Length: 248
Image 1 (cartoon, rainbow, N blue to C red):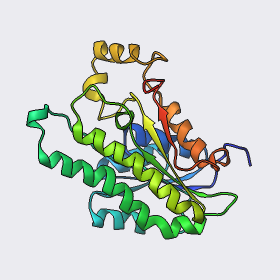
Image 2: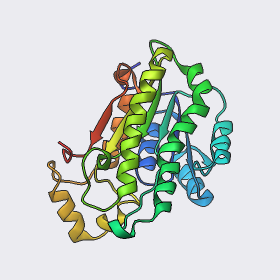
Image 3: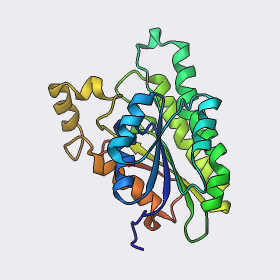
């Protein structure tokens, strides 16, 4: 098996119907993995699954019922869990609502923790010393550096995802389950559409990236496949910025 092969692995990607989740799911499908994607909106997740050739599981992962739905849909051992589902919220400081913190904490942090917790039996079934099971959490460079936008709950929650990644990694290493995070910079997604859909703003954002461009689907898929392959088997507790150098 090649150093970067994920062929035959069973992979779950949350928030997989669009944006970064779709990029990652598409990469795994193309590389020969068996992929399940979840999202809240049934029509969207089923459409994406049909286009990519993977399994759709409609589920709201901010609820215990949604978590149970996804876990029960995956039959047998799980090799790779990609916790990508998330939300953002922007508002001026003095107008920032309390329910924004509640929503983003539930989705971006609690959702990651409890889905990982519920999938532990299936991850343990897959894990071995030579080929650990993998958990890949999607954080953000906004959880590493202070963002220019007033997205207080989002940046705080993504920083929480990074620390949760490290904490879970320490706890699960003895069970041959690695836990790492990817911290994306500017990529095309629903969260960034407000800025990247405007050509002038897009050009300005790209100009602020040391590598001079917005991230591409292969950039995101490649990072996830690396962490899931034999090449990434000795990494755990890491937060990898995939941002063209923005956070450097």
